[in-house]
Length: 213
Image (cartoon, rainbow, N blue to C red; front, side, top):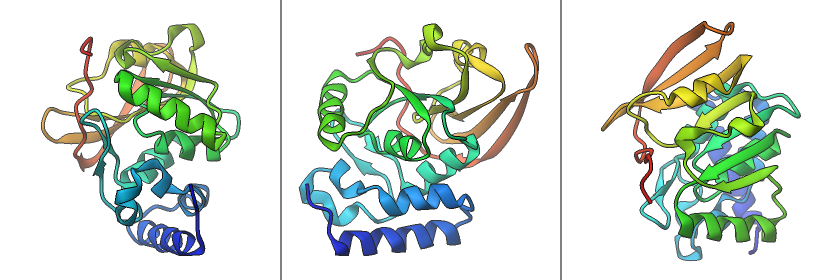
């Protein structure tokens, strides 16, 4: 569990690359510079940790490309103490970025093997989401709603309705929508009934699974 000077240098380079690719939020770039992404991968893949690409983790899932993590996080426009719901904990890297921005994070993972592994890792690293839940992200987390922001880290064929309803007025939902290729989509809740929708380019994600385990 070492984080060396070399790792920090690689993170600085990665942050510079993401800035060159259009990420502007200084706090998001600072999170990329700070969080030891190599610890979220198996140690044999350490060299891949600071390249800007997605990488396989257990349970046939992936750790998202750093650019994607930064892009989705920037869209949320997080303020300290915002309540954020994350659908798809995965390796926990995205969770760590949200925590770095001082969000109160509620995170749901549906792959049991991954859930257990990441929960142990969080304890070891002292990452403290408000809640880490094993369950179906499609349903959201009604008992903790409403949320200032909801981030979905897997591709969905359409927007799960419960997620829309669990957003605060003024809240933001960032979700990749589509079957094989996804369009990153931002929904901003303007009123009880009204949502503003923006489509922000193509990305590739593993599918968001409903009621499968």
